Structure formats: structure tokens, C-alpha cells
Length: 206
Ligand SMILES: Cc1cc2nc3c(=O)[nH]c(=O)nc-3n(C[C@H](O)[C@H](O)[C@H](O)COP(=O)(O)O)c2cc1C
Image (cartoon, rainbow, N blue to C red; front, side):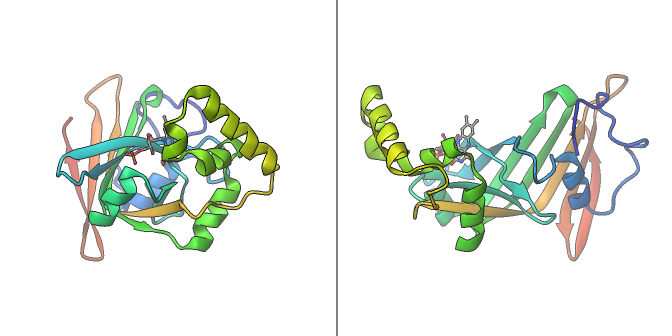
């Protein structure tokens, strides 16, 4: 868990001491579940034209097994994931000299889980989920703001449940790579790949 800026590149006494599985370590690198400061994560998908596609989303949570994020069923990424659920995720803490890269499969969560995540979103993000559609995006700025204001006053704080277009995904890692900077020497990069019931671990340069 990163609570403040740790010494650059040091999160344990001996970074060469290998955890046999990466998910516990991943949990220690991420902010606690109750933190409002969800990290931003680059989510890469495979475009419908075969080209890589990418964008940033908020990491909604990590339950010890899977990372989750939320989006709109009408979005390009949702269409891409329906065609091919393979994703890569990148989280970076430049000040702490750390990066985590994850590969895995994105699987939609059930409605109860996505409803619960919506309830935890800020008022601003709830309004965004309801009003951020293609017709609104095509309006001029003043008209977009009017729509936002009208929707907000018709739906007081606490009254909104998730729109039908709200969807969550869980990404269960198949590969996790931890990168730590080291001001006094080469960086430290450890890659875990799922192998049978366990993980194959490699030290990598770069
Ligand atoms: C700081 C920040 C946070 C964002 N969080 C989300 C998010 O949690 N979910 C989401 O769908 N889009 C989020 N976006 C918008 C996406 O980056 C993207 O523009 C949008 O989801 C459309 O992507 P797509 O057309 O590839 O589907 C965020 C953007 C920024 C800059």
C-alpha cells in the first residue's frame, strides 16, 4: 500500500526477496479499498479493426483476486471487450518510482456488484454516468450544461441508482509485472506469469 511518497524504489528491505505469488504484493501497492483517491489506470484493449486501443479509467477496486473498473455499455471499449476480452492495464506512480503492468481477461461483473460500485461514486461521477451520452456530447457547451443542471435538479443527491448503461468489469491477472526504480542502481522488474496453479517468476531488465 502506498500511503505517502516512500523512499524511491524501496517498499521492502530486500526487493530481491520474491513473494511466491503477486496478488498480495499488488494489494500492498494499491491504496486501501476505502480510499477515495482511486488510481488512474491505462486500459488497453484490442480495437475492432485489430489496432491497439487505449484510454485511462479509474481503478474501482481490487478484491485480492481481480481489479475492477466501470464504464458505459455504449462505449467503444465495451464493444471491443465484447469481441475480445483480453486487456492490458498500466498503473504508474512516477514520484515513487513504481509501475505495475497487468494482462488478463475483462469479465463483466454482476448487476449487484456494479450497482454497489455506482452507489460509492461521487455525485459528479453519478451525474456523468447518466448524462454522458452521444446526443449530449453533440450539443454545444451551454446546452450540455443545461441538460446537466436539469438532470441534477430532477434527481436530488442520493436519489440516483445506476443507469442501465452502467457496467463493471473484473480483470483477473494472467501476468503481473512490478517495476521499481532504484536511484543507486538499475531498476528492479519482476514478472509473474500464471503457470498451472501457481506463478512462474522472472527477473527482467528494463
Ligand atoms: C481522470 C480520468 C478518469 C476517467 N475515468 C473513467 C472511468 O472510470 N470510466 C470510463 O469509462 N471512462 C473514464 N474516463 C474517460 C476515458 O478515458 C475515455 O475517454 C472514455 O471512457 C471513452 O473511452 P472509449 O471510447 O475508448 O470507450 C476517464 C478519463 C480521465 C481523464
